Length: 633
View 1 (tube, rainbow, N blue to C red):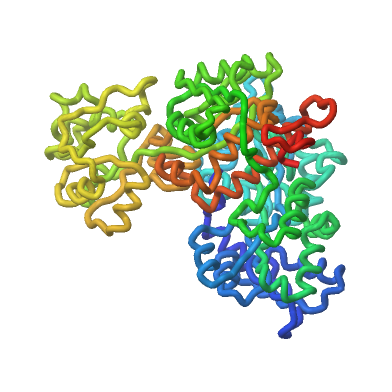
View 2 (spheres, rainbow, N blue to C red):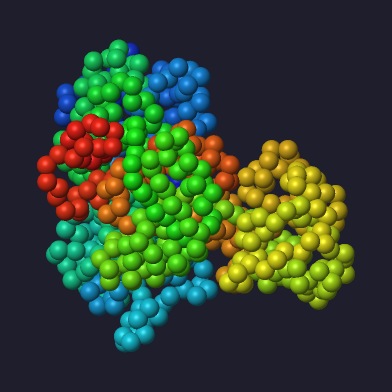
């Protein structure tokens, strides 16, 4: 996922989209709404249905809208993303107590002519189909299915100023998508053209019954969370499985809601299932019944103010837990899980959490054999072979934790270190280079005859392993004939002062370097064979930056019905344990993301419960409350 960071596309989109002039009242008693303009027509339509005559809507965009909302004079903010921790602090400073409600989604689908020999496609295959670069760009479907006859690829796409185009572009490598697409004006026209053109793939807004009338099929996306193919739907989006979508949230000032009777009435309409019809009329997808249920509980509980991307949930960890949770796999999240489970077990030690660092492959094998509840991963779930899970009827779902990354910092004046290949990085830092690589031209004859000065760490850690993992199955020892210092600020200053120097550090360490405004240094891009990629939060999370290592959990779905497993996962993303996560320096998760992670967990718990065999009679939870067979209810 590219996490919708293409600011230029979004700016153009917000400038051009929904430019109609609405008849909106401007009076002191009007319900004031600010933020993203994308949902304006939906809000006006629902206001009319609820006989709300006075709406004062100001389309300022998500970021500016949240900023205005946090000043305290606005009833509702409409946002295309979760409120950030910094924004929440501003709200808190102004005594703006708010709640978040999931409102609607814009989902796009990929519909292909029936002759296209694929029913499921991976993100990397979509990249080769849609990326703007001509390098390795797919032109024939036979590239994906060699046993089929030649069938040229024809891409049907909406205009660049549409929301559908922006969502597709934000999930594809590069700026915009390939320039040989056939643009369509109307969705019905695109569906008809896709049905008439063999080899066509159309980027369309998702709608029920999309492929029912024409000889086309909706292509599923191979999930980044596991090896399963995922269809476009609100359920899969809210579970974090389907990436090609954008969700919209309502942030409500609870103080003003208590002062305005009409505001609560209007909100009741907006967040109830009765709004689904209007949402669909304007081309959006309503939230799931589970999300509507969470919205209703949020509205009824005045204390449910912890929004920030996830909203309040009903799950509670029982006071006492008894039983076992078994985990095995990679060591990259071992320490974190050990610390979280230690806090969860408490002094009574009635909950036993067994964690074995046996490597990813062995962990996945144990999960598929039904021997453990969770497997720890250190590579993207969709790259794994989990066919053994299917054979043993174990359905696996993935829970992302974040990514670790190692970044290289070079001297600003050294042009030859602007981008290094994985092979060059190995030659520089591998212990075997200690007596042979001393100058830059020892790496490549085209590099200058300049002494290589390396600033390393006083100890070896996982970030050294990540630095050398690119071309080795097991990372070799790192060279130790370096100028060693534990402080990243010291090493950064040294690199800035010495031409021909290089050091490495974590991404959070580099953020400290930025905060100190260290001069004469810059990040080094890395080429793993597909071009130079600069490290950033986006490229690290997306996995396109080569010196990154994701951390996630693969769960046996049926284990997600176990209160012990539920409690461990819930505790992992609890506010109380944020310092443990922060200490592990994962990229891709902020404190403001924790409520959203918990909301996703509750969705997974509900999904697991719906698939589990029915139990006979009420079940007493470990906490002692009778009939709490599932604490997510």
